Length: 351
Ligand SMILES: [Zn+2]
Image (tube, rainbow, N blue to C red):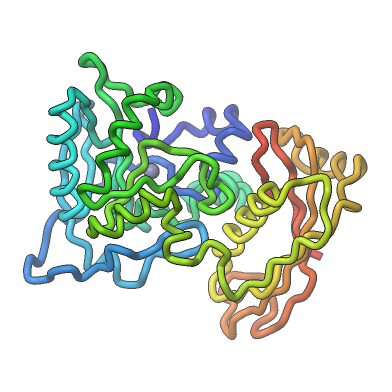
């Protein structure tokens, strides 16, 4: 059951690559239901948060967000408590009522997860498995849309039965199509579109919807069939120079998906400024390099390999990072392995 209880460590380990590529840098990890935080507060504040804020693998939750956030808590049909931003919840109830007129029944599987909760999971994994493994498997705290309280994961109730598993839910394409058609009317958009993984960093998730509190914009985004990133014009991450050079072995989208993984891990290097990412070229795609990555992580079962170089600048205070302060780093090396489900995983990095 997705996002329900802390995924048992064993399950995580045995699910190996699948889990790594699905949750890598995402916050699709579970919330600890026993931890409770303040519910609603301070009704004097209206629209203290920016409903159009972009939070993804490379855009952090805005400062003060959690202080300004007003939430409500509800209990779903499987008796889990779910916390949602107030206006998003009102809009969700209207959407739900509208869907029920067409005999479509949904409920909330998961909505808000606090940065603190995500940090707790990260710390636990770091302590048990080391920092590298934790970074790969656990969402980076601060970089999940679920922190906003505006991202909702729905589940379906079909013939009175709760359908909560992702692999089961995804089969109900007709129902999702009907749900998706109504989202914009209530100020929601579908966030992780099919075929947009190279932009959003996530595979298709028909259940993950995002409240943006603007019906007109939601309609525009939906009718254009674009991602939120594209609408906001950040799809290519402006200032960063991405150089793919010449490539034949991989498609542009393959390389873009790999770069997202790099950016996502880079995002956790507090204060570092990304300048450039360069594909090292097809010459690095050798059996020898593939063998090396598979030796580093035999569980990876990598099928292909890609090398990238990165230029970045470190901040004056590097904190826990092992880099020199206020320094330009050039051609820092990233090695990625292609997993069996065609995702990418960072296997090795450094000089
Ligand atoms: Zn989600």
